[in-house]
Image 1 (spheres, rainbow, N blue to C red):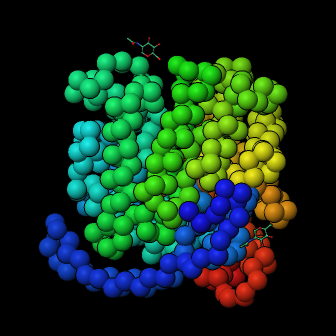
Image 2 (image 1 turned 45 degrees about the vertical axis):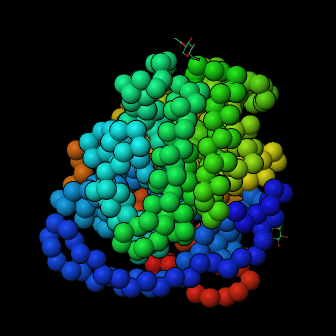
Length: 434
Ligand SMILES: *[C@@H]1O[C@H](CO)[C@@H](O)[C@H](O)[C@H]1NC(C)=O
Ligand SMILES: *[C@@H]1O[C@H](CO)[C@@H](O)[C@H](O)[C@H]1NC(C)=O
């Protein structure tokens, strides 16, 4: 790690690498020469700010959870390049994706601690391609939900192997044997040596940060103690294996009853008080470098009108940015936001309005050196992925207005970064913005 417990950044040299290599595509059996010459540095933090190369780094980015999955097969692999190309064209610099697939089709982990090399190679490819487009990856390491396996899959495996006996999904958090298996998973992924670049994941600045879990909840223990212990153990463990990367939890952002009873009124409803999570307590964990928040007003305020949702979304985000400023003194990244097209009376202008409002909050925070570090759209896909779509998907190129809006946000954040930096050297992305 590159900052002390009080959040002071120690100056460090960014990793400079220049790799030339040759690899053989196993299936098609031809040689391809890839020359990858770039300067890239790890993302660090100084208090509430992300920093790259000693200057502030503000995030405009997106989610494409499916990248590794679609990189496995020859037929779908071109989508990875197409996605990064489309993202880079809008000036986006961070993409959040799954670095897990536990026991489902094209699984990375096929059973406890057994990995499919073919799928690891797909993840290697995703990381290499991201680097080529100067996009950093926020990689999530397991799902709370059952999509792509998730914590229920670990529990089923453990029971089948006769090493755990409680079928509660939350035994993923409290069973010591399952926890030790998850640590094997963490270590295997984090120390993976990319067969295309030769760089271990833990040494690769293309990776923005590690996310412990997508949207953890531990309903069986509403006090929050079980999840808190798990977070401390797993984040601490990652730090022993990887000294370079930031770590976040992957929280949605609900406040808990024990530590912040005064904030419960900000939760979407009383039900969310007892998800076993606590935004402040969990994010304060010393090995956690930044906080994450999701916002889904369409799911949390069912049936509400757009105006009411917009008001709630603003309140939710601003409250969490204030927590970052005052309580946590860490950056706060909005890692998922979007608007469902299944809403009654949906119109694309609603999405435009929501995006703009969120972008404005983030820009304002950045201008004021606040903890609001940026936002990731849920989610982007490319043409031809209709089979995988959900009601939040945006396909770049489909609606020029929203593409322009997204690009405008990238450009004003980049301009702000340039304005704040001491040295003056031209941004690569300038050509996109001019
Ligand atoms: C970190 O932030 C503090 C306070 O904003 C600032 O004074 C200091 O120069 C920063 N350190 C670096 C290395 O940027
Ligand atoms: C399994 O764990 C849950 C949650 O902690 C607990 O309520 C339950 O009693 C446990 N069941 C068994 C059979 O130990």
